[in-house]
Amino acid sequence: MRFRLCPIVAATLLALFAVVGIALAAKPKAGYTYRTPGAASPSVSFNAVSRKKLTDFSAGLALKCKSTTCGGYGGIKSFSRKSVKVSKKGTFKVTGNILSYDNKKLGTETVTGKFVSATKVKGKVTTHANLGQYKGVTEKYTATGTHSS
Image (tube, rainbow, N blue to C red; front, side, top):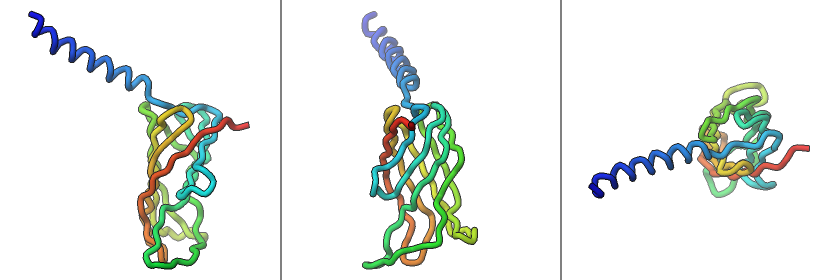
């Protein structure tokens, strides 16, 4: 009898931990601004207006030099999005076009993130473009939140 109860108890505990894990998913703090540190590349920045919605979202490009030396690249608008939804699990994903200043599409960029705490998000920026001497790559980022004053 004791051996028959073990699988039932184990299954019940596993289900309970799964429910608790979902309930404890980290979410952003409303009124906080999240940013990567000063010179971090790629840069990511956004505001949390609620635990479900991010606004003023922007991200820099994730690029790697194709040769040993690369000059600057210019004429590119910053990737931005007015609003991004946060899932029940504390994750988000946004894709947008990379545009030149004359609105010519140069490629796309995808930014993903997961809130590991209410004030910290980790994710990846993937640039899908070849821009002169540069090629798009995937880079990790960590952004921290501070209260917006």
